[in-house]
Structures are given as C-alpha cells and as structure tokens.
Length: 296
Figure 1 (tube, rainbow, N blue to C red):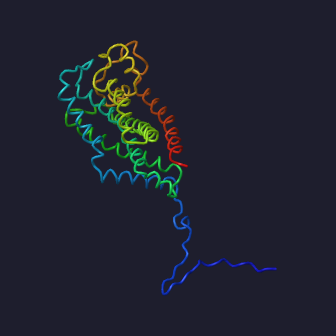
Figure 2 (tube, helix red, strand yellow):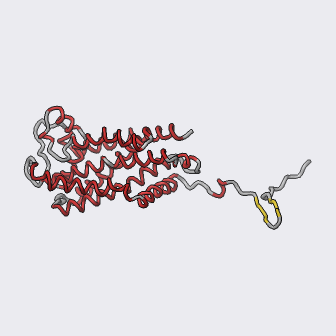
C-alpha cells in the first residue's frame, strides 16, 4: 500500500548563482475579473487612442460646428419655418440628429482599423471575458458621443438657440440623444465587423448613411419636398429625431396637419421604436458577425 503523495513544490533549476523557479500558470497570476472590468479596460484603450490621435475627433468637434455656422449664417436667411419662428432654433434639432447618425462612422472605423492592424488577433490571445471586445467599442464610442453633444449645445447657445421647454423635457431630449447614439453605434459596429477595412467603411457609409441625413427634416421642412422624397422623409427616423428634439426643447417645428402620418404626429414615440428596433436587431448581428470573422 503506497502512502499518499505530498504536493510537489515548484520545480527549481540552479545554474551557477541563478535560481529559476517554474512559473505558475498564467491563469493563477492573472485571474479573470469579469465582463464589466474587461469591457472598461478595452474601452479605456479606445479613449487613449483618441487622446493620442486628436485628428480622429474632427468628426465630433469641427464638423458639427461647421454645419451649425454654415447653415445658420449662409442658408438661414433663405429658409422659412412653417408656422414661424427662428430658423436657427429649428436648425439645431436637425444638426444634432445628423451628428448622432454619424456616430456610427466612428464605431465602424474603430473596429475596421483594429482588424486591419491585427489588434483583434492580439485580443484573441488575452484572457478577456466573452463580449468584452464589443462592449469596449460601444462604451468608448458612447463617451466620445458626449463631446459633440456638448460642443453643439454651446455653439447653438452662441448663435441664438435656446431651450424653451421645461427641465424634464430637456432632460428627456438629452436622454433621447444618448439612446439614439447607442443604437447607431451598434449599426457602426456591425458595419465594421462585416466590411473589415477603413476604406470599405468609408465608401459604404457615405453611400448609405450620408443621404439618409439629407432626405429628412434636418435642414428644411419636410413640407417643401416633392412626392416620393417627402414620403421617405416622413418615415425617416432622422426626421422624427429632429422633430422630437424640437418638440422637447420647445423650438420651432413644422405644425402637424390633418392627414400627416403617425410618425410625424408622434415623433418622440416613433423615434423610440426605431431605437429599440435597431438595437435589438443590430447588436446580436454585430456580435455574430464579429465572432464568425475573428473567433476561430
């Protein structure tokens, strides 16, 4: 009958005065810390990249200010808001909506760049929680989205825009902005996961997303558009987001007329339906596309 074997001590090897002790398994030295921790670590990586490459923030800083100033001072005098009111206040809801749609570009470019420079391959070798990579992209881009919202609000105040609604309505407007940005970020993650190259993201994005922001009430009232274009604009979520922000901020908006579609009569509710629908559809598809392409 053999006696129980005592646990073996770490293997040691001696060469001269140098003593080498066998390393413990990596999993014991670096235990998993959970999804939330890993997500924040990867999100912080994205934020550090933005800090070190500030030119990447041009779409979130320079572009919104350029559009506000350009349309307010160049085209503003030629556009009349149905029902009266300041065009500059009418404009702000549309500019904000357009900028939030463009947040999808930032998310798509982030994941496309990481696939191109093989950072995704390095992520696969790390002991990160499942879903942390996708969550990191979403969190970092959500934080980035706050920057253009603040900049556009301050720029709007400088050109004469005012929040004329109540405090709770204004709070609801900013909540709607963040929710819509979150949904568009998942659209961008899906696009980046499917395309995989910055050049492809730029081409497809401008061919699909850019026209979507102009066939809407972002800069001009929908009533001024002809036939089919007007019908598309009336059901376009960019239109209803623009109108919803105008309603919540108490800014001038095209009056609702009898016979207008439900989307125009209820812009806040219709926009929330799109936010929920986009997130439910695009988030799982983005995770699936990323997993199929990058996880072997």
